[in-house]
Length: 343
Length: 168
Image (tube, rainbow over all chains, first blue to last red; front, side, top):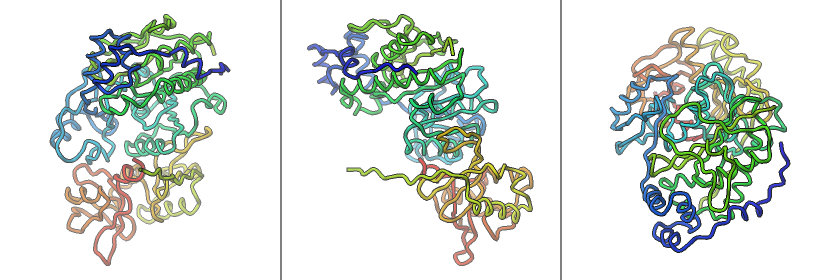
């Protein structure tokens, strides 16, 4: 792994942004930290920023992903509908449904069908996209380096079953507890759950993987519609700290990748600092990594930015995928597929 | 203010007495050897507070806390087969040592309650020790109970709701 001597102060200097009057007015109206809204204006223009802020005012309903190893999708759908849920298909994700309306009782996370492991409840559909793209037609082992609470890991286990094992790692013990609970509940046996800081994995494990899922702990700025506390939770200084960790995690993730393998770098954030900036910083420090185009199009997503405010990114991050709440009706979500060109 | 509760966590090879308890139960209830279904020598155990999960380890990677299939559960001193192990046993040896719960019984049982005799639709002996509780709807294992002669109920030892309540 590269010893890059990352400095939070340097990152902060790079990403520093001053909010203008328009941004401050919008921030005050919608209850945000001004720098965040200034970012939205830089990325989307004033009208686009307003549309994004409006989209963030509307909570999204959860998404049910069927455990097709235990039950057929149609059967589960009709069982949940008989309980009073109304489900809508996700056009690009087979075996997943958005909960459009629900009965007073039970909740979607407490039905008998849920307890029997027939499905996983995702907060949104966006998380399914990178896993589908990464594991399409792949049948080997997978490393999910920051796996808890387990949405992507259990999905990956379903997709590679029975050929591959998903190594689901996380640093947080309370969250690992949930992850193990999901594996036990869903009766998915092709798993190996490990407890470690993903940044040290290249040092303590000798084995490498052809597929790596790296959903890094981030600001979760894309999930504001379901967690409005995020409007004011992360000051720009805190973003710098997150970005430092994200760069370190991506670096470690690439170390865990075998030559020719593919890694999905994922954040539920729309912040360019946590995405294009972090990826560019890693690309500029390594000559063995490249960004690849997603192998096919699930829906009409947006591309990564090649510049933002005063920052110019590596051209290759244009291949990254951006999901916008006001355009795609999902969480704000960004992911990049990277490959290792040399071991 | 919410106080963060510390998790009591242990991960180790499964203790001999736990493996022995599982072996004994499978032998008595199904007249079978546990070794036929699982690699007994590879059993490991991870505990979160008072709930321990016995699993068949499939990795030696450092930091491994769970892997492969859930084989057994240790809860409040009870060592019982997991729903996955019961399913294997039924596939191989037929319905034994289980009771089938009615819809009403399933609802109560999955929320941690005991199973009343009036909520039992079918009984497959022997029932003098732990029994698997099956859902009448699809005959899936939803937990484990033990007959209590004094209160005339199948006492809840473990149910699938535990994953939510204890691990969730």
